[in-house]
Image 1 (cartoon, rainbow, N blue to C red):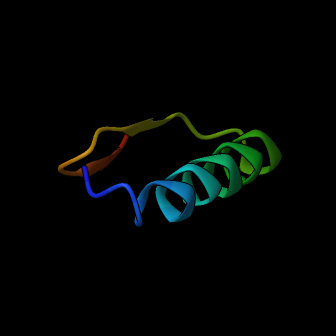
Image 2 (spheres, rainbow, N blue to C red):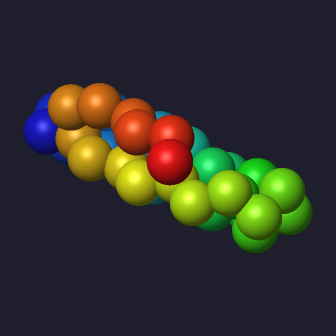
Length: 37
């Protein structure tokens, strides 16, 4: 992964984990795709 993009990726991952806890959804994050389950 591009090192410049890494902080944005991590902050997006954090935001998604907060959203998933709030709405009680399981969200799996990989570098290439985002899967909603």
